[in-house]
Length: 466
Image (cartoon, rainbow, N blue to C red):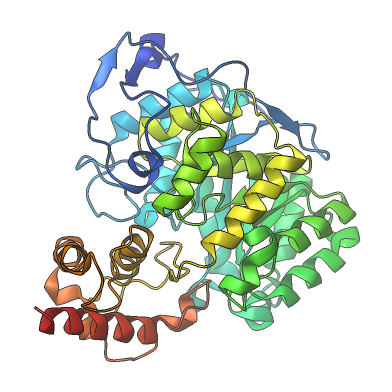
């Protein structure tokens, strides 16, 4: 296909970087807003030690960066993530970070019509169109979750709008989004009965889609069904959730999930490369209990907590790219350091992380990945913020069991004050009426009303024990 003429980029923008070094703690990198977001002109680049690691897509020969740029959490002008905020996307910052990523070897960018409250594709279209078309691979999805988008006409309109928003005349990687959510019934309604899967296959034949795949959540019957049709459909790639906890313990965290070891193994059997999502398990593998932090740091003092999870996700040879949602430049620099080049895990490292996973399972956190599929709540409850605050306090030892605990008063204050700061009072758990609307949308199959009621009872107990 003909490439559009692209405006050349001022390479000085590549030198505008944030000042944080690669040894920044994982909590600052992935769990909290950076303390200093000022841009330093001409600062030294601590991001990488060598050349980016690349993998090859078997069907098209694409040389894909092992670090994939996830576009679900683009920065806003209020210095927050556009996944969580209605504030305007900071296009200048998006441009800078995309420029920096491409300059340092990243060429896979993953977006969706649903990301950043529907604004991600547009922002990425602006940022990427400033580069020659052969410098990047764009992945997007047919995110026709709502039944009112299941019709053939509505789904095709969504697909064509993606091309328009991204300012391209072909898509490098196209995914059926969230296969398994809603089971076979949703699968049939979204892609089979309306002929959309056949339509996408024809678009691949026409060259408007170069690689066709799907992202998987939930019902294993759907995953197995689609792989059983591989000889007919010829999937170019499949996106799965993979991290060192879900590798062997996905079902222990959620009986509805499937161990990544099985998912990855099935893809290897069929010769299908894997794109990895949730390498940090929704950020939980970057915000681990202090004891786990000490354990990881003792083994590799200069590495961040998050880098262990990224190394695990990138080590299998059948992995094409590992997606990371990078709101701040520190995220990007840290991940570049991990994958430039990748230091694959040794067998001893894998055993060490399996032991770490078993230790993490002993902490009673709620398996919320902050995906926000449960939102909006019809009663205004900020479900993810409530669950994340609870998990944070579990990890930090601020869930006092009773008034006899040695640190009871401190833990009580930290939990209650942090709760009010994290969640406005009108959006807290005591407003849940148990309508169950959120439950059907949760990929982790969390009993959300039950957890909200449990947390509310805990809060009320803490308030009474003053």
